[in-house]
Amino acid sequence: MYFEDTDKLSLLLRSLNVSAQVYAYQNYCGQWSVDTSVMGRTPFHYIVEGNAWLHIPDRRSQMIKAGELVILPHNTCHLISNNPEPNQNETSCRPNTEQQIQLLCGYFEALEHAIWPLLGCIDQVLIIDTDNEYFKPILSLLLTEAKTNSLGQNAILDHLANMLFIGVLRRQIDSDSIEQGVLAALFDPQLQTAIMTIHQHPEYHFSVQSLAELCFMGRSAFAKKFNDLVGIAVMAYISRFRMRYATQLLQQSTYSVAVISEKCGYGSEAAFRKAYKQVMGFPPGQVRVNSFC
Image 1 (tube, rainbow, N blue to C red):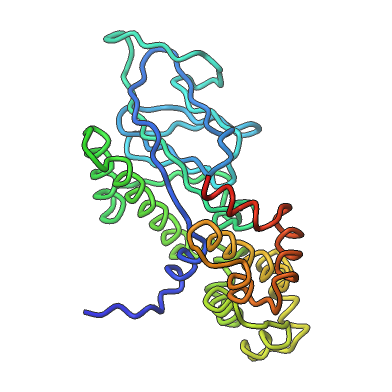
Image 2 (cartoon, rainbow, N blue to C red):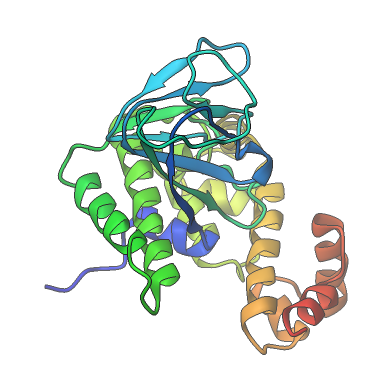
């Protein structure tokens, strides 16, 4: 069987260079609490064994049970602890005196996460029952690998966590719960052509008019719908996506800045350098120097 490269979600994820990482697999007992909201990423926690409590400011504390996956799409301040009341206790362990709880923790991220909020339009917290044919085998492999100490362990864990992230996105899309953001536009009958074209061909010389015509819409109607649904004006979205793509090329290729400027749709290197610094806050040369340090 040949798989055609027309999967919209796969194309979007490739262009945004989304990554995932597992950083902890721990046993807890006694008085304990875990707070990873300061990491600046999208944290997730999988309850392997036992029950725990999720605490979020201005929300009622919620019990999370074994087999449930907790995701904080907005990196919301939170605590996970043994206690139904929020606390900042230091972790302590007294074997055989308290119920043992096992947690697998990690995070999802993409460069410029604030600009590319793939989960930004989703609820503040997701609690997913993983007892299904997709999540169950992935998490089983994650746990098996987390217990080993073999070569390539971290790489395998990260790839499996990335599969977990894609499954979360697929679940949200299938449930029709995404009403705004890039994912909503990607599956909108009118805007999807524009989103796909922007991500597949950053070298094109786009205009609001040309994109509107691709979508068989009037210029004003297209511009308004894009801004309303995605949350940013279309030309600003294009500029930011091009700079994301340029950053990836600067970090992972040996193309000259002049070639990268052409691949990002700029007629001159000077115009590209100016746009890059305006969007990113620093010159492209700084990215390349840091990449090869």
